[in-house]
Length: 473
Image (cartoon, rainbow, N blue to C red; front, top):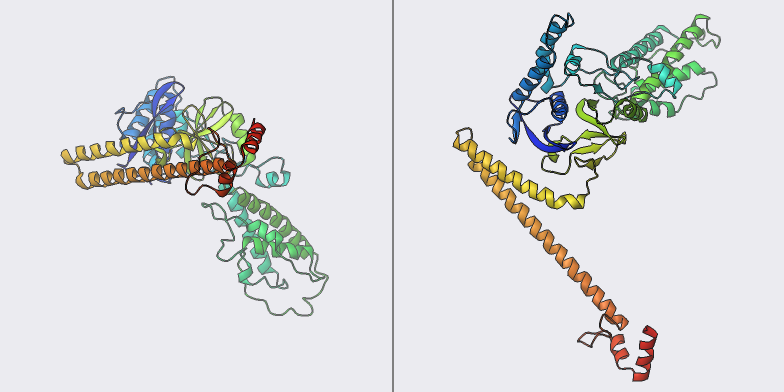
């Protein structure tokens, strides 16, 4: 969560031949403020107030966005009647940009979002907000169950089915007792039912589908489905019912009970599909979503990408999707600018400002030099703050100096180890050549410790030695 006076590190980059800046994120919390500013910086729509400064304050960024919003949306007689009111509402939302916005996605389009006033800023800044959490229409059963529901509506539907099943189970006095509480969750400590905010825990529906069912020949298919629902959604177990009376054990129920159970079964199947969809797409990015992002984004277009409560700057270059690498850990990696988005999970590929793959071996020296320069700049900045009476610099400078010393010692040790390895490799090659009886200048001379086989070869008669030389030729 960003504090009102928080400062963000600034990093330089090149965007389509133009030198500009990007803002780095220092924590893992949501920060749409940085994503929006980075889009506008790359578009050259805004400029930092202090070019070349290592940091910029949140208040400065907010002022930049507000100024640009008002300049790009002038209120005139020809303006929409609600423009002035929208600008006023958007200005009131600026403090939320540093904390996070309420985003409720729909699963049918990359720009499918339940509209709220929090999204008003994106409209007024003319920046698209996209996501890749889409259901595959080829999975017809799941697509029909999800429909055009938003995430919140989908979770509410599962809760509704859960409550309905619980009520129906309690209303049937001759229903069999539910499974024991310890069997309600797929594994110990698991949350058997997804909440409205966090991503649902994986494995709920799949574990329920594979759970062993009762083998009683008198148990109907509807009862098996009810037990599956109780296992997958972790239904609260009602008080154990007393043993059924002989009348209740009648295998021919009344006409109303089958219809009620059929309704429950359909709802249970729907809940299982919805729960399985949430569990299977816990990364909030699907393959179908990737395909639709490729189709939706134009070449060199800049937008904001939402995933796992995080906002990032996204673009397309050469038919590939890229996210701006804004993690503060890359602040001292001068070559790392973009992350290629071509997988729904797993490691991403780091790229330069020219969208070329960054090789680790090529970045080591540049990274070390940039780190040393950044440390020196931090020391100078700390000393300047101390001179201006803004804070102590003595301890900070000492810590920086110690960090530089430790870094240099590690580099020297690494170089020494590499030299030793090269020397050992050279000695092994020389020994192998000596054993074979030839080298760059013919047979090696005898020396203390020379292999016995090579000494014997050098002591052979001239004819045999000559014959060996001919063979070598």
